[in-house]
Image (cartoon, rainbow, N blue to C red; front, side, top):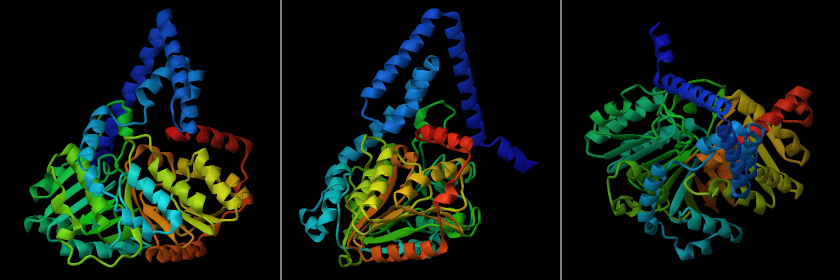
Length: 507
């Protein structure tokens, strides 16, 4: 009975009920006003017309425009007001002001060494320059990279690096959940904090809402661990709740860093089974390029919990025993909804555009816009071996149906699609022509590409690229190829898919 009451009256349920009540009240108020005041009816309709004109003029993704143009045109009494309340994809003014102010202070710390581009394949220089200018996160050498094809394998190495930490540990994850993985990491963090190590934990409040105890922050702070929840859930009807910190960053002593698809929860290391075998990936960096992740974390931390004006003491050269020999060029980057730059998607599009031999892709979701769909199809039509691996066992059935709705046009263009039959693939990676790859947190869906704070690493001529390619080949062998005949559906099923595609930017 206690567990049932706990589920009924937890923070997420309470917030959801309060938001739903606000929505019902808002629609009821609109209806009453429009029913009893002709001039208000006309005003709401005029607002929808203005929103339609605004959307047509605004530089937005066409699919996002269409998703909002439809309610504005079909329900002019509500459509314009709904867009005014929920349609702006950018975070709230206070969040933008805080984060932009901190980032502007530390732009000079992210200087791009001019000579670095001479060490890169000529085809990779342009995308690297783009990331350095619009990220703005530089490409760096003197960095070694290790690829882990499973969260289980990364977990063992993470524990060893945490145990060896002497100066600081920065932890930033979308999900932290009680269980074996978190408890083992938490035990190390407590010991390190007690020994004087600067330990900071940053997690997403929505991502971890159902997975953590009520007084999680208070408990960590009592052990000397600084802790903060990003964008705390509030019982308010506001679009700002859509903007989540989906990044996965672990920095140890400024010269070791991890990122990838894994969160700090047991399913990511296959200690718990939710959707069959959990296939994920991670990368470990050691050396100069870790600096980018350190700045990413500190910018997010100092925007909401100001701690330091200078980041100089966190530079990798202060604590690294020795800088490793260069293994290609490594460029960690972050994508943010603070601007109108779809940086993560542009990296993917550039890789597809420059591919000559192959592009292998891991993604748990495939909810893409016309630009990405066209790029995938065009690459295949040019003779590039384009292969996608998606889950066989879905974690979200509606999103999985939406993912499958993109299969027919891709298959018809020559793209090869595989479903990971052992279970759920959560990895997010592109590898191309044995010379360029990216691994990170960015899914091929609207939330990752447009609404969330994300991160990734671009690798150019690095040894780990061969390891990622090998993982892809082994994963293809374990997966089931999708045939066009597998995609047949009823008339009403296809109609439902069309509706989902139309609304996909809002899901």
